[in-house]
Image (tube, rainbow, N blue to C red):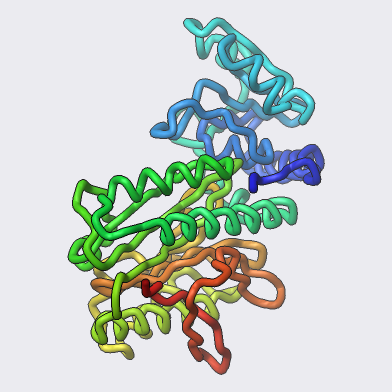
Length: 371
């Protein structure tokens, strides 16, 4: 199933975002802002794909926003696709096209004499922090779109977990995950695979030629139309050892406390403190220092991490992916904070679940799949 966008009012979404951005520009007293970073371009255009190189944070196109105009400044290579397939002119972004070997000339002309800002270091004010705040407060259309990305991420990783067999290499598993992501219209921008002892040794295990014996962890951050959902799942062949089962329960309980503790008005620093206390009570006080505990998620795999004294305040209609882990086990899903509380958007139908009580509530967390 591919992500469908025909029901989404992209033009209305763009209009609202332009208004929000221009209000920020006025508050910062700038005449124009240039967006070069792919997450910001995807945010403002309601999911347009302007990238070429997945390894780059920028592409050959920029957005130029003034109080009364919005342009896509691009080259002759990209212009046709951006008009015909990404519909940018129809969304209110007329194209300014220049020769590919003269990139930058038109942008310099259009911004001459203006009080300029951009979404990173360079000429003019750096409004990258302002833009991060804007893009992490999801509009209803974005929340709907991210929920579908979460469902697709769950389907992709489940397909792979059930296809794994002992003797496969980690790289082969990563290839299956990349294929499953592309088949659903997205990219696995984080594609981590570890098997057996590598799960305990490395928190960010890039896939290797090692072959699977009994135990596999797969981590996916799936990006579709700019938005990203994160998910981790584990599979074990044969009976799960008691010690490993106990560690999985620890991560499930810490994860449950973090998910249910995600409340509007709390700071990311308070979420870190919550995680640290949960680990201490589980007898793993040092685990909070061995890996970050996740944070907000939107157009980057993590926007702002939960870390000591981080003052960023949590709000409704934001998304989060906490990822508590101890050596050998991990728990991770993506949630959206709604008015009634957190909603898990990467639930995997048919996956074994563990009910966990935390703060007077019960939430189910994914268990290790035993095959």
